[in-house]
Image 1: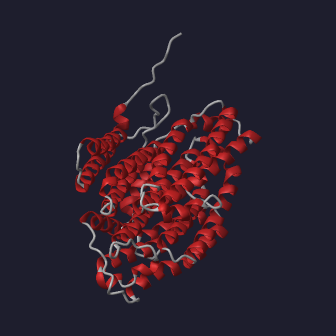
Image 2: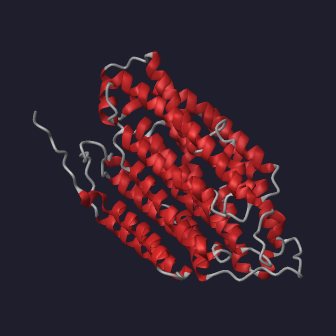
Image 3: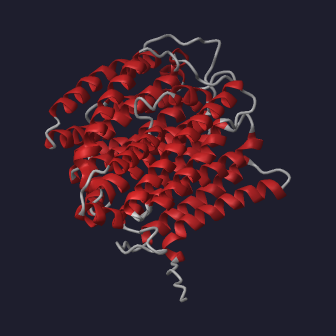
Length: 485
């Protein structure tokens, strides 16, 4: 019997290998060097991520699958790699500030962020359900550990346990969904599945069940209602930089997985959109309402951002439901903007600590504008962009998200999106009111923040304003990517 050896192109996965080498290097330095300074860990991670970023930019996109058809290095995966690498860099920078209390845990934190980033990059280039599942688990396992990495706080361990148990439960749904799909189509390759369903578009019970289980498993990753129960407790209990990566990287990767499976041309369930679209339509509707209603009642900053994250998952699902090219482009643009908005907001929560105590309540930001005007100004940009204020990337992104829903004639869904967006202005503007109107407690001074955190916040703020004023800086690239897949 002749054994066929699959074509292996390590150059096409070089960015992932560079990130892996960086993570191993960070761990090795912590293991073999007696005293590793935080700045050295941050510089090492930044250098590795920058090299991987520019390596990804240098790759030539190809629609031809590699590694026996398991992965594909198309222009979309290259763009997503750059988004994930930029996000990992920002999270590392704000983690540098957070690690001031416990610098010994910073190398492990940085390595886990890098390992999770590799999982996101694997998801982005998956052309088969097997590497897609591997990428999801490679993403999830480091995040479980990151959620419980603050060993001095009981809430951190509780968050990790809740995240792990519910995450393992959702993994079971994913595995069963993949098994049922394989049972019907006799393959796990997404392109072959798409071609098979296009030729024989029969909604067999096993196929519908496989779709439903797959959607439930991915719905947990992106915290769509009613699979969102874990998010508020995990966001509140986990260390703040870990929360930032859970809220952004995990959610973006989950939507990328949905796009790979359900909406891209010639792939999997795109031929059966009449069956899965109503389900996601209702999930988007419920998620927008629950997320915004929950955020209204929060006094804890991280819980408010958790419900805000749930609501934004609903907005992304609304555009995803349209199944159109404009919907895919709007989703990609808003994911990039959401990354900057959310990482920036959590970065301010880290920087706005007072007398050794981290900012937990919204009221803890009282008087921030008087003592730290740049922090207050940056936080205002993040809150206004999350709310969708004109002049920010959040407004442009939401405009295109709602436009995609209207184009697909989902008028009621777009109307609910607009109404819930107007509702969200209340709890976002409340943060700004506390910073600029409420009097500070002069006995508690805000600590000085590090250069790395200030750099991360500056990049996020400038990026949001820049994309709000000149959205074509990113939109033109996204159009090229979606037109090539």
